[in-house]
Image 1 (cartoon, helix red, strand yellow):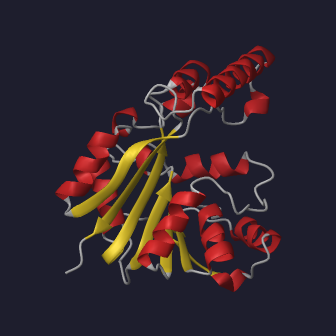
Image 2 (cartoon, rainbow, N blue to C red):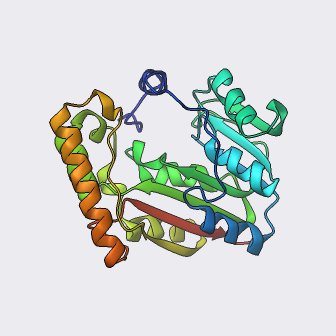
Length: 251
C-alpha cells in the first residue's frame, strides 16, 4: 500500500487555493517558546524544515535566530517562498531550498534541529515517516514534530464539515504515547510528547463553506476560547495540536 495519504497534485491544488501566503512572521509565532528553548539549550546552529512549503518555520528560524536553515518539500513554488522571504526582510539566498521527494532523497548532511509541522499525519506508516526525520538529525541533535489533534473537538468538526480534508489525515497517529514509543524504539530520548494548546477550531478554505457552517464554527470557537481562558489546560478533548521533542543520542 502506498504510504502517502496525499500526492503532489493534492498539494499543488491545496496551495493554489490559498491567498495571502506571504505574511510577516511574528516573534511569537506558534511554538516559538518551545523552539527558542531548544535552540538556546542545545546551541542549535543548523536546522531543516521537512515538508514545510512555503517555509514559515524556516523563515522564523532564520529571521529571529539567524540559523543556517534548509527547507525541504516535494512541492515548492519559488515565487511564493521568495515573496515570503522579502516580506520578512530576508534574501532569497538566506534559506537553502531542496525540492525533492523525501522518500527518494539521498541524505548528504545532518542537522542540529529537524522539524516538521503538520507532515507526519499524511502518511499511513507513522514509524516510517518519523524514522525518515530521524535520519536527518545529528547525534546530539533534536527532533521536533507537531501535528494537529483530530481526536479533539476540532477533529469532529473537520470530519462533519470537511470530510475530504479529514480523510487526508491518519487519525491513528494522533497519539502522544504512540509517537513517544516510536522515538524511543529508534533510540531517541523523548523530552516531551503531549497535547498542546488550550483550544482552537479551523476549516480549510473557510470562506467557501456554507454560511451556516461558518456561523457554527465561529460560535464554537468563541465558546471554546472563553472556556479555556477561564480554565486553561491541555487535553485530548480540546487541544488542537500534539508536539513531540526528542534528542538523538550522541555516539
